[in-house]
Length: 427
Image (cartoon, rainbow, N blue to C red):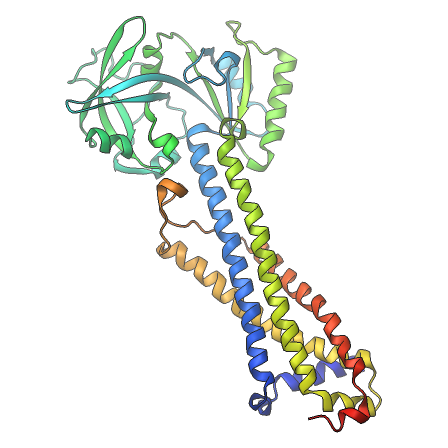
């Protein structure tokens, strides 16, 4: 008896003669509703995941996961130095969850050409710095090797012996510079110093806050501009092994400093800043996307449920005589309800199949061709980033199936209102 509802539902769903009846368009509409709803949900989740991970990677590319710096440098551009010697670097590297430690130094200066000038921030990095993000965003030239000692090997800096520099495309366009050009930089301290640079490469991240501000040069050169000697630098940037455990790693750093002391070898007080603390507005904007996702998911599931309810009611009304016959031969209401619920499962299943094909297909097409273009000044990317997550797609399918069936339980009670004697005369 348990297989009877499934058998009848399968016969009804696959009955060719049913195509001439009004239920066939209703089934097609219900299937389309489920398919479109699921496709929109898949695309929405893919876009949000793509945005969050792409923007996060851009921010991490310039700011790392965690910064260790002088407490007096918090909220300032250059700030006070810390002594980032080998001992301190080794301690930081030994913290569980820390994948990589790299030193950096910030210096303020002005780039000047014969036509124009531009105030910028020079970020000095050494040979241990992870430059994979920069390399992925180079649009002109080649990324140079960075040094923590004098790269000119005793030669005096001049136009004939310049230091290496990487600038953004925004800066290159404003100053009309290209890879291979020589540009002069001026630094204002106790006295004005002039430094010659060769533009080795041009990068473009489409993140205005970075492209408008940051140049990349040697760690040694940035130290010289700040008149810092030895192991003094602005701080260290830490990359963690698992971004989802970022806060745990930061807590371990704080615990470590509490245990061994917060001072470096020269008595400077150390503190930590996570990427969330450095760029709170960016991550708040990304968090707002989650709210939009939940709204879209609710609307699309409501669409699928509404079309399924409409389709099921039409099917029940059209099959009134069949329901009367089944009741006349002894079928119970629950058995007949199960017939129509199984029928709904077939409709929803086909809708899920086409929804997956449509949604995943559009995501893959965007990944391969980038046909959906965006304004990088507004969205930080030139094309809509989409990322497939098979686990989330599976959960979306299961949620759509279960919720659609649950909302059909109520309408299926209409079966119990149909009387065998009256249904025989129903047309």
